[in-house]
Picture 1 (cartoon, rainbow, N blue to C red):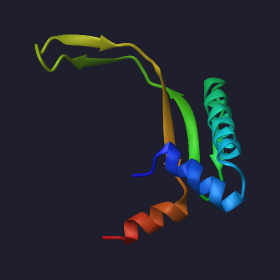
Picture 2 (picture 1 turned 90 degrees about the vertical axis):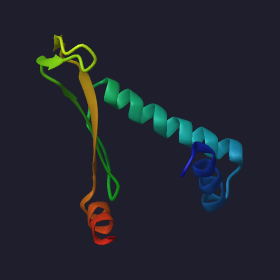
Picture 3 (picture 1 turned 90 degrees about the horizontal axis):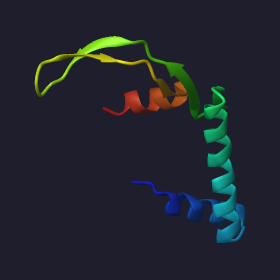
Picture 4 (picture 1 turned 180 degrees about the vertical axis):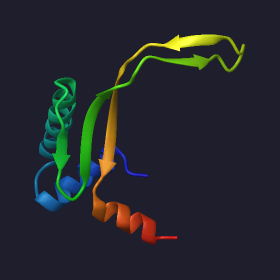
Length: 94
């Protein structure tokens, strides 16, 4: 599993910067991605993937515990779509 700490450590090693600088760069990247999504903008990182925001429709559903019908109100959701290269690599590993 990759964690924030391991990503920051790898950024530090590859960029030849201090851990504090790597952590700051990581936080700036996450901040910008989050705020772009809050503005409902598409975020595209080439050779990695695309995040997009979409609004679900109002729909009927059932409470699994009671079986009662409920209305699920529309809400904003985030979707991630991996790039073609990543999909090909994942699907070639059986």
